[in-house]
Image (cartoon, rainbow, N blue to C red; front, side, top):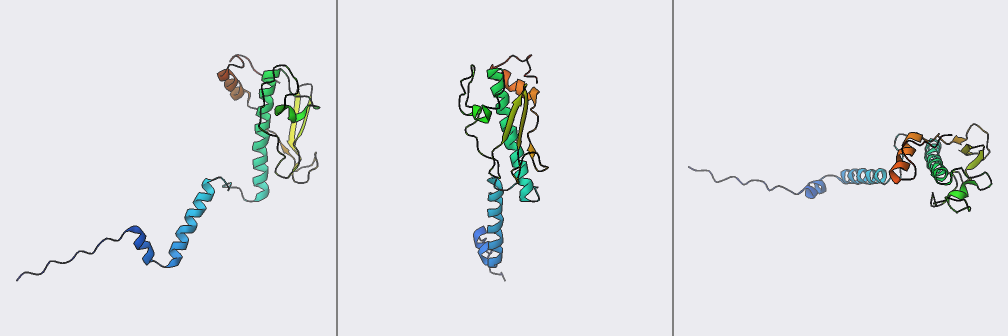
Length: 170
């Protein structure tokens, strides 16, 4: 005697399998997806233990951007902005021959709401954030990194602003 054929169970779609699980499982998956999207959009700095370090890190990146803009200004105008002209010379033409800005879109304050501190004397640039306390010259100040001249010269050479052999120097 022959047995009747056995019915194969139908495969359920993935969403149906998830719907069979407890709601906690769905909440966990939803939370994981939202966390991934939050990290993906850049709202989180991975690896930084607290908000103060994250602000200092971001401020240092902002200072690096300002320092690069200052080097572009110097390459075009053959000098840095004076202390009187300040960082505003990167946004608004101060009437200097060779100005090809704006070198940055706007000049926002640092993450603590204080303006960046800039001075220039004898072609020596001083650029920093006064940090959380807003007082310059304290240990919490965030200093601008020195520019990477080799990388800057490569970028300037690629735009035709300077020849490869030239160096902005200090």
